[in-house]
Length: 281
Length: 237
Image (tube, rainbow over all chains, first blue to last red; front, side, top):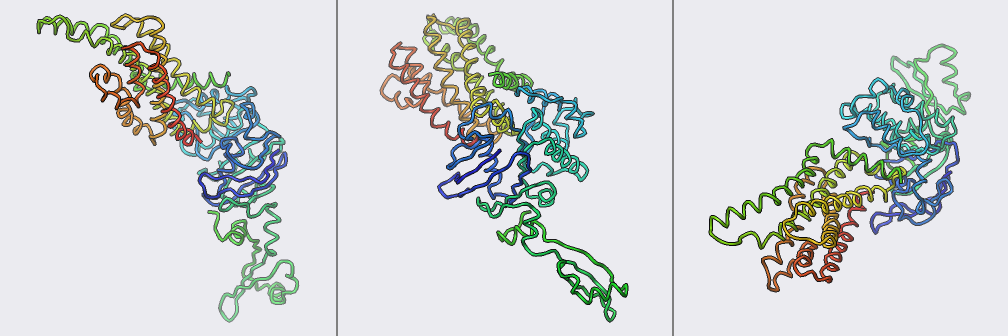
């Protein structure tokens, strides 16, 4: 679906995106993780054909992006981080206009209903809250039922229930066979949604694997437990894969003296810090 | 082509929904009425007051030229402000990733308004001009003023961060019109200090009807457009 070979690009004379290579398979959710300014949005701009002055090869749906024509966008849906909506129009008018630009169209009321905006369909976008605009912006990318979706921070600024709703729609789209490129610095969203995750820092690809492999490759999960000793709470840790050798833990369990016990895996953020020396958030 | 037309139709709809921009477009007609009926009335009054045969008559051609440039200038000013609104609302970058495309967006926001401005200015000049114009001259002058007005759209969009800045810069961009009166008032070589302005060559063309001025008016417009277009294009990404 997407093939990137030896991609190089810079806005200035100094190198920025350097020697980037990756493949996104059809039907997967591929996440770009990195802090602000890492180059995630620039890669998205290259993949969506907004920047065509790159070096190397970038193929989307078997089309070299720098040689795309307008039909290229019939099968691509883009949800930018910031809403791109006509503020003076209602949400329905916005959807009707944007869907009119494509050959294939989905039912607008069904889309509005899917993000809980049907009751606000005739309300002007200028009267919408930030979260409502984000939801409308998201379904705008689905209006022509594209096979490939570029989502930039789709859950940013949403309350937990709407964030859940959006993530469910993303998973639903994946189940329908869509390919999704998710740009985020939210490690929890990436861990939950992505089949593969690429770590981007300073314009370079630092790691690429499944979230599980990335987590497991950086040390086994740990179990931490606490107990009382001489009137004080003591905390101990044991590796999950050698928990049977921890005599203290076994003793405490037999005597029912454990105060608490937790398992803890490293997060994608921990791994990102370890690899790049920088935090995601 | 359908997405392009639909996007342009929405652009026009947005201009009409904006009362200030709508008035900017209407101002052209009001100016035309003022020039057609106000200037001759003023001439009549001044001539009888000062007991002279002609006072403003020698500048009727300048008034016509002002009218010919005013129409595309106002249209392109409205177009630039609407583009800045679309830029603020992130519409510009979104339309670039739809079948409209970046090229389509540029065509629908630069070329189409200039095309409409050309047609309207031909009509206005044909109806409201104070001097006699041949059909070909009307077409050539309106074509040149429309092309030079694209500079206004590019300039305002490229150098303004938002609509408020766009309005402030709009006043500054009036300098581009400054070339029109120069050949009427400066006849020595100092007039060529304004030769970087397309409007200067447009006025020269009208006065002497020499084809070389047509090429110079076109060349200065194209140079301005190509210089500003680089910045415009960078802002569009």
